Image (cartoon, rainbow, N blue to C red; front, side, top):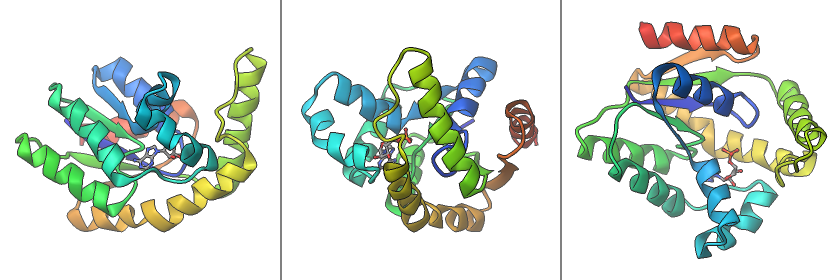
Length: 191
Ligand code: AMP
C-alpha cells in the first residue's frame, strides 16, 4: 500500500507517518527530512537549498523529485509520502514514478486543520524543542510560517482537487486528538 499524507505545515503529517511506520512497518519518505539531512551533511544540494528552506519557500521540483526517485529505486513497498508531493508537477511525477515500477497510489489522506491551530502547534513545537535542550527548526518561527502557509495555499492545496478528481482523496479531521486522528487514518486504510 502506498499513501500520501497531505496537509499544511503543522497538520500532523510527520507524527502520523511515524505511527504508521511503527504499526504497519511502512516506509516513511519525508522530503523535508531528506533535505534537512542533506543540509546537515553539507552536500552541495543541501547548501543550495538551506536559505530557501529557512525562508519557508519550496525548493525546486527537480530536486525533490530526484530525492524521491532515489528512494523508490532502493525498492520496498508500502510507502508513506510525507510532505511530498507539494505541487501539481510533483504529483504528476509521483504518478509516473510509481507506474513505471508497476505500483499504484492507494489513497491520499488529507489532514484537515485550521490556520490558528497550525500557528499554535508550530510555535509550540519550537518551544518544546528548546525546552528539551535542542534547537528549534530554523523555519519554525512566525515569519517563515507565514511564507510556508502561503506556499501551501498557492501551490499545494490544488492537490486536494487533483486527488479528489482521481477518486483518491480521503479527508480526515486533523483537529482531533493524536490518537483519534490515528484511528481515523486506520479506518480509511482498512476501507
Ligand atoms: P517539511 O519538513 O515537510 O515541513 O519541509 C520543510 C521545508 O523543506 C519546506 O518548507 C520546503 O522548503 C522544503 N520541502 C520539503 N518538501 C518539499 C517538497 N515536496 N517540495 C518543495 N520543497 C519541499
